[in-house]
Each structure stands twice: as C-alpha cells, then as structure tokens.
Image (cartoon, rainbow, N blue to C red; front, side, top):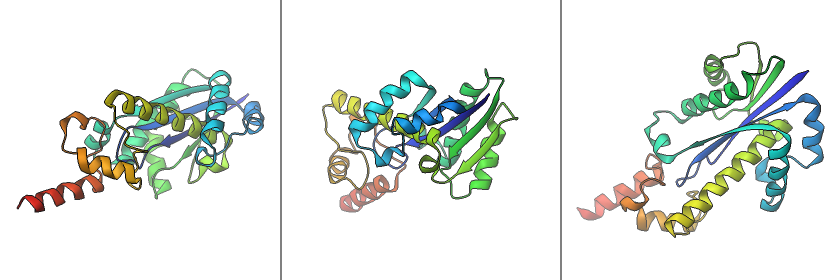
Amino acid sequence: MVYLLGVDDAGRGPVIGPMVLAGVLINEEKENLLKKIGVKDSKKLFSSARERIKEILEKEVEYFLQVISPREIDSSPNLNTLEAERMAVIINKLSLEKKEKIKVFVDCPSNNKIKWGFLLKSLLLRKDMELFIEHKADINFPVVSAASILAKEKREEEIKKLKKDFKKDFGSGYPSDPKTISFIKNNFKDDKFKEIIRFSWESIKRLSDEKQKKLF
C-alpha cells in the first residue's frame, strides 16, 4: 500500500489574520474519490463548493492543520523558513505512525525549490519518503488540492471569528481589498487590534511612515 500526503497553505499574503497550513493523507486508491467529489485548487472553487467538499474530506481523509498567528509571522525572520518548519510538523504528525511507503507533495512557497526543499527535508523525521516540492502543486496534485481547500476553509473560519469577536468588518484581510485598507488606516495604531494585524508587512510600514511624516 502507498500513501499520498499533500501540504498547502492559505492566507500567506493578507495583512490581517492568520496563515493556515493543512496536510492531507490518503491511501493512493482514494485519489479517485478526491477527483470524483470535485477537489481542485481552492482558489478555483466557490465558497459553497469548498464547504461541501470540506465536509466530505473531514470524514474521508486523515488531516492536520496548523494556524500561524500574525504575531508568530511578525516574529519570524523569514516566512519561507517558518512555513518549512510548520509544514514539517504536519508531515511528521501524519507520517510517523505509518509503516507503508509515503509520497509527499508540497506546494512550494519559495522561488528556490531546491534550496527550500533541502530545508524541509532536513526537518522531516522519516527519511524514507519520496518528496515532491513543486510550484502549482495545488493545481497538479489532487491531494494537495484537498489540503488547499481545508486550509482555505479554516482561514475563512478564523476570519469570521475575528470579525465577530472584534465587531469589525475588515474585509478579506488582503492589502488589495479597499475595505481592508480603510480598516488598517483607521485602526493600525489601536492596541485593541494589535493581535490580528501583521505589522511586518510593507503596507503597514508605509502607513506608519506616512503618519510620522504628518506629525513632523
């Protein structure tokens, strides 16, 4: 028996909220099931389709999630390294109890696949797994597409929770969203929101610089 393990992220680019990583482990024979239920890159699915597929995946596959807070992101000197470390946690969690052969497919967050792949491999506890580090893996490998859907849906849950807890609609959290931009401009100095904003992002630094210039 051969297992397939796919890992992907969601929310790497936003200025508000967490980044979520997900890993999915399936028996190789279950790959057809993923295709049958309509698994594909989460960015190509409507919210209703993602929710439907997520409910099926939660019953049919082994999976593990990592939620990385804005503070963790800000305190990390390198986002690619942080992703490698946390993806390794996911892969180790899903693979260590299996004795069978495992093929691991990872959607690479770095432009340098080889260098980043060596870093990830060095963090894995099982050294006998086949490792495939690819750009656009969420498009080309159904098991990674499944991981992308679980990551995206978890990120959406976290964002809805933040909006409810803080009683603020800050949009999608992406710096291209006008609603997010407006929220950031009006609230980024407010300590109340310091736990949900990524202050290491360039868009926040630019706003801070603009405020300083106005003061002087």
